[in-house]
Image 1 (cartoon, one colour):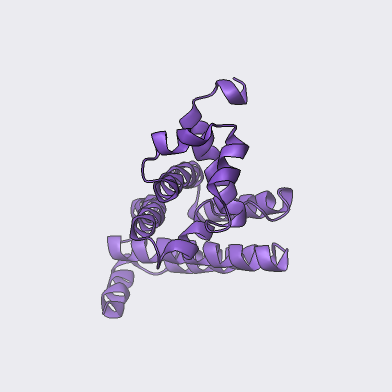
Image 2: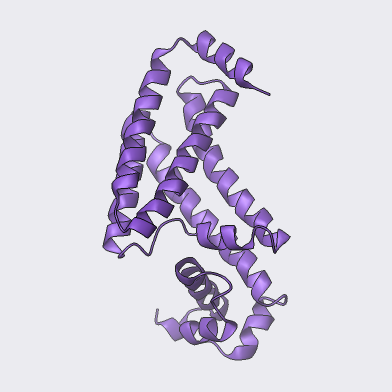
Length: 208
């Protein structure tokens, strides 16, 4: 299907996702989105009545759904968790290198930029991040971790990933992803050697 025969809303949304991710929300004007999507001007407000803000929320939710499926693809399987983490971070490093450090997290740029200025976009970003954490936490629970510990470990994985993305894009090197990958694998391997009842006690003691 050619670009112009695809649904207008889809074209606008995909252009917004791409441009917001690459150059930021504030720096991306409505005109540039419509030009990129080859859509008539009035069509944006037809499909997104709230204008750019509505489009921002939709872009975050769509990007969050796409990335959630990627997390499912990497972690919802029977492979050892260390192998999943290794493949996940290696895949992220390869993608960054292949795209000249443009493609990383689909929502991080807009999430950071709008967290204090647009509550609807902040909530959409939080929902996306929590959905990714939820996928990994469920996998860790299936591996024998109690729910609190699984959630903490899953949160740690994504904190490490997002921080490594920032360093990788600014240094134009995937070294940070390799380092994060190694330490996460070491942490997960060490954690699985601790008896489950002891992990539960440690999680309870660490809770506020």
